Image 1: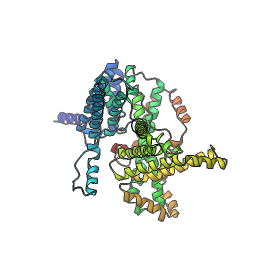
Image 2: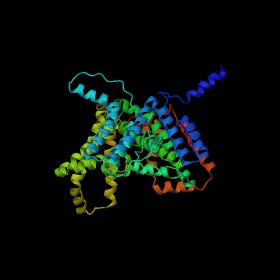
Image 3: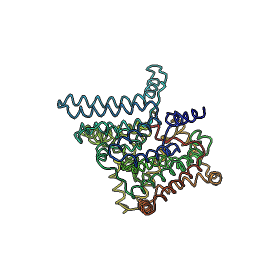
Image 4: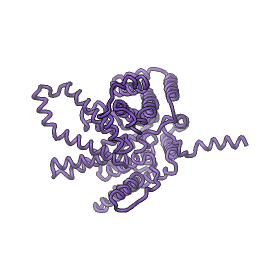
Length: 499
């Protein structure tokens, strides 16, 4: 009987647990990943075996994260592979166009069903079209990310930017690739697939950078983001009226760094894990809080999504609306950032978030000549003073829109602003500092980490590359220990899992 119990325990490791998904940063993931890496490096001696090893583990990883919905992932790979080939070989332009657009409709249709059905039903209820009860629909983790990856492949074939890949196996690896299947970065097939022709070699410098990225990602996510979220930010945004304006304001500053550490922490780990396998993925962050405009921010934040929308939505819209001149450009921006808001979630708050960003960008473009003339007249054109002011001003605009991003609904967002502007009570700050010293410390450390110059990061990686691998292992073990010590609850899901 004892042996059967042990067997059951062993088998349970390979079963999907709805409330315990396999995600980066958990002890189970580290166990699975190091077991995979052992097989990948020592047993998979040829490129073909390595590819099959990654595919097998990627499917298993997604199954452990999303359960039966891994069939959607498999469907996406098979459907888009064959449709991509069909688009390429079809000579009749009308049929080719119809095939492409039907494929886009299928991809978006699956995404809309799982992500937006209940939101659409809510809109119909609000318009008194009928009375529809919400459906019990589970949102598969990562569906937005791998759907956009697949669509970029079809678009690039249709636009004759690349030829379709001949191997379903290799295309499946592109779609399944476990480091970015759940939360990006959203790689392009034209950039990722050529890497499959290499030998996946990993230099000592690559290992050092990978270990550094994984350690930084763990600290960002599990030491900073989770702790300040659970112990302060979540409480404020749940009932803002229970807190003074000062506490709400600190929560706004805190949430800005929380979501950065949460998302960029995942990306760091994803890039590091991919690098250990010999793959290089797209960079997703470039000091976003150093942006001097909202447009510049989107060139620095979630860069793989921003570039996707720029190439495949904004530019075609801009071209199609070019006869409307300035108005056409404004409409293209408005539509694109409405899509940005909706991409992040089926909620009016996200729509408001996208619309506000579009307004800021349109206003900035429209007033740029006047601002440039003004700076020239006062002798500050191109000066560092103006640049610093723009960075600070942009950050606070982002912090303002972040309230709509974080709040559960429109009313909660308004309550946050109500407290800040009518019940600030700055005299409570010393008491807050005394009671929440660790929170303030971690928020400050998060911002220091964000603003750390890239040359410091590169120098640290260079130093790591000079030490033995065993030192890397010790440092990683210390970071894991730190994560365990700072954990005040179960591992928290990544914020962008809901998108």
